Image (cartoon, rainbow, N blue to C red):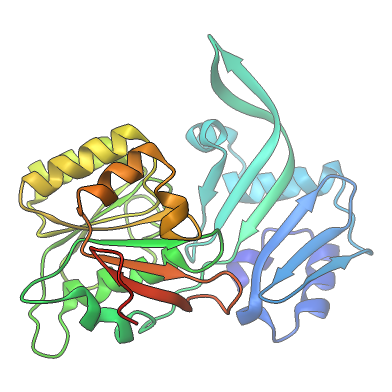
Length: 300
């Protein structure tokens, strides 16, 4: 995890190495708040580094590392509120926001940071692939609360589909990675393994990205993370009408909850998705509460 440790001043580096030890594989987030104890979030608990209270100079050091000493290089990130670093790790930014004509122009004073540790788990989707395939791939919706492993799962699904498995040949996969979390691209180059036949539209709004990908790269399967608004749903329907199979994810706990959201409810009622994978936040990351068919009947 050298790409993460190098961001911090030497004193905080020492505290992090001492506390984390060999537990990097269990670490989910490192959260920093100005003049407050640094917070470590593991799979099953959180810990505080009371000896590490990041001050203004510490934040300046970290921002300099992130921007390579040029805030101009972070112009887009300062507007969006996050950036992706080497290794696919995502750094969330918060603080005093500047606006122009009612729109966010930049985060001027960054006083909160959240480093989300990228977890590439090769093979995590292997056991569920037979449910997603029946004489061809099936439109699939992955449902889960934050930090239940939706992105990790959808990333591995992309890898398997675009590489092929058992007797199923590899397909052309298009990934719309609006927040640079699936592929974790840096300057357009994915940091994660997405398979042999995957193309990525990075940092592009989902609705526009789906149409751009269909026009430019003719994918057979579209992979989209966290659909939500009407524009996303409209673009998804256009993709389906173009003959493209869609695998996407959405925030939620149950199908019943999703049916209360007008845009998602319409997709469920039209039986757009043939498979629903429900992740369980009470179990370990990536575990399923159930797999359901288009009628909502549980299959596993």
